[in-house]
Structures are given as C-alpha cells and as structure tokens.
Length: 152
Length: 152
DNA sequence: AGCGGATGATTGCCAGCGCAACTATTGCAG
DNA sequence: CTGCAATAGTTGCGCTGGCAATCATCCGCT
Image (cartoon, rainbow over the protein chains, first blue to last red):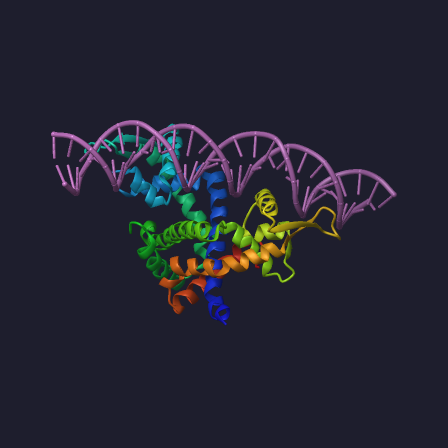
C-alpha cells in the first residue's frame, strides 16, 4: 500500500506543523506578556539589526520574514508609528524605500533579546540535544535552499 | 560569549520558523488552487476521518489542530455551511458538541488526499532522506511530548 | 439538596494579513 | 527616443482567528 510506505513521512510532516503551531503560540504569548512585543515585530527588528546598516529594502524584508508585500507595508506602518523603524527613500530607485531601524528600535530589540532567547529555549531548544539541533538544521537547510526565494 | 555558544541553536530555530512559513505558504496556495480546499479544512477533515467514528468533541478538535476555542467554532460554522461537517449534541454532557464529518466531507477529503500528499512531497519531503525524516520526527516528538496539551 | 467554582461552546469586537487593483517608476525592445 | 512590460510599494476590501465576556451545564463540597 502506498499509504503504508508514506505514513511515516507524512507523520513527520504532521509533527512539523503541529510543533510549529504549539511552540509559536506559546512563544507569542510570552513575548507579548513579558516584552510587550509581538513576535513579528521582534523578527523584523532583529532582521534589520543583523544587517549592520540597520536597513533593508521593503521587498527584501518581506521575503526575509515571509510576508506578502502588503503585509510588510502595514506591519511597517504600525512599527513606524511606534517609532521603532522609519522609511527612507532609495536614492537610486525612486520607486523604492528602505525600512530603517531607529535608535529606539535598536534599544527595543536589545532589551527584548534575552527574553526572546529564553522563550525559544523554554519552549523548544531545551528538549533538543546537539545532535538533534544539527540534524534539524541539516534537514531544514535542504528544504530552504530549494524552496526559499532567496537563501538569506 | 553566550551569544556565540547559542548562535547555532538559535539559527536552527530560525530555520524552523522560516521553513514552516515558506512551505506552508506554498502548500496553502497549491491546495486552494488544485483542491479548492484551504489547508485548515483539509486538516480538520483528515483529523476527523482518522478517528474512524468520524467525530470529535469541539475542544479536542481544537487542540488537535491547534486552534483557539473560538477559532474552531467559526471554522466549523463555515465547514458546516459547506456541508462537510455537522454538529451533534453530546448525550452525556449537555454543554458539549461533537464535530462530525459528513459523507460529503469524507468524499472531499478522499478526493483531496493525493493532491495534499503531492504538495507535501513537492515542497518538503522530497528534500529529505529517510535519516532526515527519522531525525526530524525524533526531535520534534520530544518537543511535542513536553509542550503539547494532549499527546495525540 | 444546593451553592460556587470550573468547564464547553458561542458571540462581539477588533487586529492582522493576503489578494487584486492601482500608481509611479524603471528598463528593455524596436 | 518611444512605448510597453515588469517591478516597488500602497490601498480597498474581505476573510480569518484570537481575547474577553457570556450563557449553560457540570461537579465537588458541605
């Protein structure tokens, strides 16, 4: 039976989406409660900060955090209103804009980082030994390399 | 530095959420286009069908697919309207309801199953060999066992 | 028996996000 | 150099789902 051959692999898929839902939900709750920061905001800030310059074109940022273009527009509207990011026109392409992290944005992400890491640890990493983490990374990298628009 | 020790592990976490977003997004698009069925609908139908009886209490179903109680109520409203499920009062607890898959629901999930599997294969499983799948399953099971409300 | 806190499900309300349509700009083809 | 398809970003609109409040029912305790 095809179903029997496939069942273990499909089972792994089910574990994957279920784990994601459970863990992200818990982490989101913690981040909101303890840092007063939605997970998506943290991810955007962390992503911008990691560039050094602290800025990224809208589309690139959208791909990074896997959002639609409209999604990233609105997300940045909110974060800009909160003073965590700014928009900067792109000098060599007048259609384009940079999302730029502000000093307040940097402070915010710095302050939230330990709590974020604690949450990831608490709900996910603590259950995995080094071999697990390596295997996970190896497997997911293969998927990402093939499926992800840009291999960040 | 703490950051250096942790970086590989956090990196694995980032791969995890990014992979989920990318793959689920692609699968969702495919399911909608090819089966005319949102992924969540498929998951609910598949979960109900797997019980044999074809029914589950609302709360149990909500936990299964990792939805809030209100979320599952509305999802079932829509699916009931489409004739794929029904609500059945629970005889020994008059507060409770069963979500029951209808014959049409069974047909629908049967018809969608191959396409769903193809999508999971296409966007995820094809990149993983058996060792990857086993390692993934082993790692995620540990997380689920500890973090999941009920270990389905 | 009967009260009080816990539990099952639904509802009001609102935030978040995607799709498609739109505007502005770019850059390639002829 | 002109025109036209492609691309960057925003906006109108609608769907989805969560939180908190609500209602009904259950159950443990006295």
